[in-house]
Amino acid sequence: MMDFDPNSPETTRYTAVDEPLDPDFSVDYTPDIDPDFSVSPPYFPIMPDTGTSYPPVISFFPKPVIPCLYCNAIPNAAASVRFLNASVGYNAFSIYVNNQLLTNDLNDGEITQYSQFTPGYITITVMGNNGYIYIQKSMSAVAGMTTFAIVNTASGLDLVSITDSPCTTPNFTACFRVCNLAFYTGPVNVVMNNLTFTNVKFAEPASFSKVRPGSYPVSVYQSRRPELALVTTYVNLNVNRIYTLYVLNWNTSADTVRTLLVEDRG
Image 1 (tube, one colour):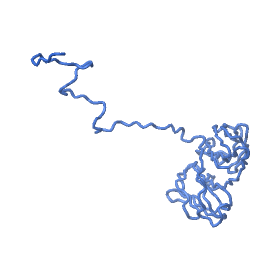
Image 2: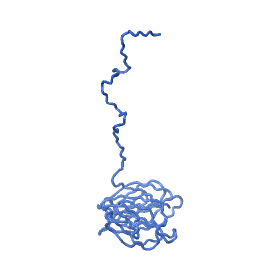
Image 3: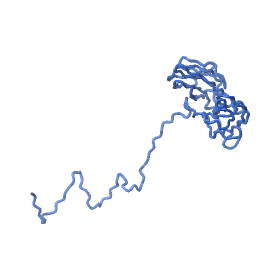
Image 4: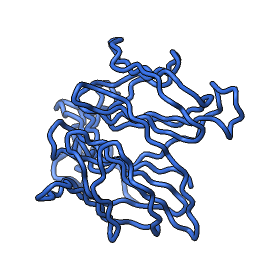
C-alpha cells in the first residue's frame, strides 16, 4: 500500500505523449473539427462524368400510352402519335395539337410518349418559348402509331410523318430499323454487325429486320463516295422489343452525326 504524505513536494505528471498537456488552456489551439458547428465544413461535390455534349447514342424508352383523352373512337382504333425534335439550331419547342398543349420544352434529340386522338386530320403547331410559331399545318393521324418529327429543311423547319408500323418478334427476337433525319448529311449507309441498311434517304425509314437480342456495333457512313465513317457506337437490343435508330445531325455540317435509339414494346 502506498503512503500519502500531504507535505511531500508537488510532482508534475506527464501523459504518454511527446509534450505535456496545457492544464490552464493558455495556448489557443485551432481545432481540426468545429465542435459547435458554427462554420459549415467545406463540401466538394462529386461531378458525374457526363461524356461528350452530343453522345453517339441516346437510348430512350417512351412511357406507356396514356388514355385516349381526345378520342371519340374506341382505343384500339385510335391514332397514337408522338413527336420527335430532330432539328438543330433552335431552342426548345412547345407542341400544340388542335390548339391544346401537348408538350413544352421539347429539346433537340428528345421524343415524347404517345398520345391518342381520333383518326383524321389534326392541326399541329410548333411554337418557340417566345411565342413565335415556326410550323402550323394540318397532318393526317391514321389509326395505329405515328411519329411526327420536326426537321430542318432548306427553307427552315417542317414536320414529317413516320409510320411506326408493327413488327412481330417471333422466336425471341428483336426488330430493328433505321430512320435518317440528318438533313445536312443526306443519304447514309448503316452497318450493324452483318446487317446493312444501304442508301437510307432523308425522312424515308428503312424496313424492319429481325435480329437476335444482344450488343452490336453500329456504324453510320455517308452513302456518297468516299463513304466516310460518321459515327460508330454500340446498341443493346432486348428480346421482343422494336427498335428504331434515328440518325440525326447535331450541327449544320454534313459530318456532324449522332444517333437516337428508341425502344418500343413488340
